[in-house]
Length: 336
Image (tube, rainbow, N blue to C red; front, side):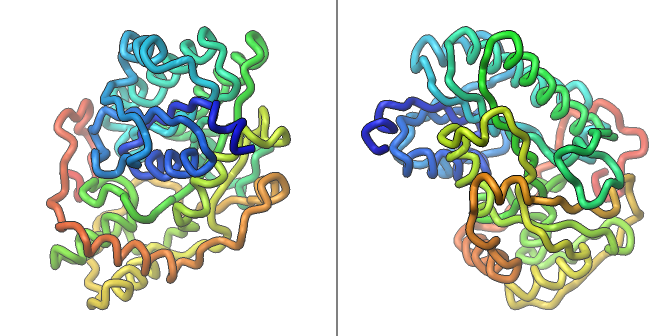
């Protein structure tokens, strides 16, 4: 296996970001030759694993993607992890959302087909499901309700089309509420655990939209990244869609208390007006367990303790607001 993998070249997008950097780590551990790509809009150069060749570039530009293949390719495996995953904000940045999440994927898919890649791994989202249908199962009919979910589902459909016409194998993952070390704590629009950690460390109350009764199952990065890296190596994963994540949902209010406890501080909470969002979301993961046989998920308390210990090694940062809103109408109060 090691000799085979040492000849395998992989490209990981979003590799200076949170999930992408961990996927790149696991690809390296499998013996792959890894090219890491990121535009550093939401990631950090410090996140890129040292064994990768790093290229700064914007995947929305077709010429940039073509140059990646010309200079560093061809690539056997494409791991497309880069995205702007602020689901709620996507209503207010539609153009940016589709350029970042759909057009960038199309550019990569064109290059993968032309360059005869052997496998395309894509990180989608449970946002494709929409409301209800709990627990969310891969065979449920997608009904995305926001531009982010729509863009992700469009990419999924395009991967199926590319497989049918060009024979490009793929694996689609629908992770949810992933947290852990290397997450961007300064992003005020996504990743609630990172937001809560940053607010606590800055001495601010944790902001909750509504009463906090909405529930999510929060997933540590160690339960996600290894599966993405291994997908092209498992024949049973080819041309399949997998939910991956934690099984046990908790309320956002309970989460806030757990985050504060992980830092050893008092749980100060500020309730903001409720925003349009899915109230309850959790997935069934039996398909992923049957194919990947992952270890037991990281318990929330343990995962929060790891993330809190890491967060203490970096300076708390002021929230970095999105500067180019396209639609300001009905923007949630906490985002103004």
